[in-house]
Length: 293
Image 1: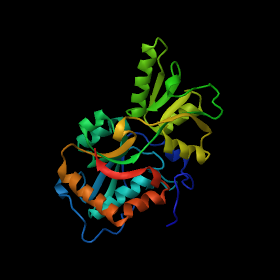
Image 2: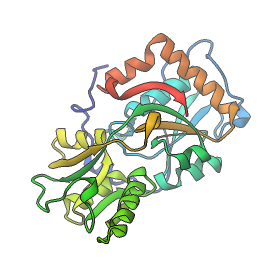
Image 3: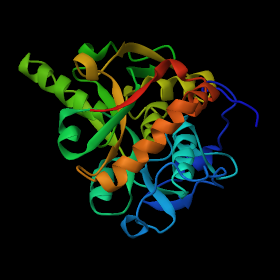
Image 4: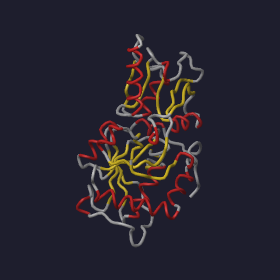
């Protein structure tokens, strides 16, 4: 298969980007030939859907998880999950969920795990067993030329800024807004959108002056020339060893799913498949060794 990088060759129909609302289930294409025997197994009675590894995602989030022009799931996360499922003798099954309800979805039994590029935060660690697998930077995004003169993250008082509902960027904006008020300035006017493409469209249409999001996704829009944007600030969320870490997640204490999935992940690390998938998408520099937080 022809190799693609994160910053080129990832064309996706605009309609596919914008039409995803609510929840939907789809199988992520044909699974690769399963390892024989599987490296581990999960009791079928414990799975949401027998014979499948049902994974909650929030699509589209290009280049990690999105639909290609043919309507098929693709991206780094899709490749990783598909290979994990194959090594468990299962088919991948994607449950497309709105990000701010995704924790409730896994706890409510709608999926076996979450693979939705969640920032590691203290609040999420309290609710989930999180496995960090890449490190992200955040950016403040503005339209090309910065027509409204928006500054960096500490200069957003009184500015209309978009963020994804339920995302760490909104939490950050709320903290920054509180600091504005404490300093006697205007709060940040935060507009929350269910998905990243909605937030970008709000910026493109002039509904907001800026957009806070993860850098890789914004770079992809910029370098594919789908978006005429620039950044006024780049920074890492969090402190210490967990700063910027992004994770896939499990119900807390759910060893029946966690243990076999992590055995499959470890087997991919051991034989080089894990690194090869990141290399295929041109994102080796942001990947970190998967580890439980």
